[in-house]
Length: 257
Ligand code: NDP
Image (cartoon, rainbow, N blue to C red; front, side, top):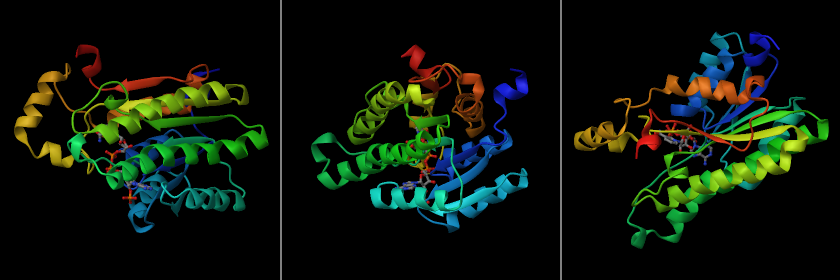
């Protein structure tokens, strides 16, 4: 295998959930840069137009489909729509996610369900619907779940989110073992601290920023560009013998706490 065959995603179709902004948008564009066509998914069609413009400017095809991943019936419809067009996604970036914080004594059922239904249940059913047609066609695939530092450590007042991301790591391991013989690899990437709409509220607190920077050995927050190489690696032939792993992109944070 030469360098091009190792890392090129030409001829591949990547479905990216939560592609409208933040990490998902960066990863959709990064995978397109490596040659993949993209199916961009989030809850609203309008919010996905910009990412598709970016993908098309790179000479790749981009299709927009609205889907709330916490709605299992909607996830089925999403994959039906893809297959009705004769398309088969062979890369999945399970990125759609939400976060909310509250003291654990005040977490109610609605908050718990909202986070788990999107981050964990949604990710599972997207993965299931992604794998089925690949197995039926005898095709290989690569699935990348978006974990978090909270896949590895507990964060006070973020119990539902931490539970969802730790659960996602368990899901990554179980699916990787179950689907390895079908040539469907299942890995996760764990971003450290990245400033996006999801995390913006934390960054507005300058004391918080200073405390965090102190804990990150590289002395800076992550830039979205820092995540692209890992996603391309996990999606491509370069990681052909890697499955069931979580790879952190965190400036050294977890190694040092
Ligand atoms: P953003 O809030 O910036 O983006 C979240 C994306 O998910 C949006 O495109 C949003 O689109 C979509 N989304 C949310 N809920 C749903 C849903 N129910 N169905 C479909 N799409 C949905 O977050 P980030 O980019 O920061 O985070 C992306 C992922 O990375 C998340 O899983 C997050 O947990 C993880 N992560 C982020 C870190 C960070 O520092 N930012 C650190 C570690 C992990 P729309 O609202 O249009 O539906």
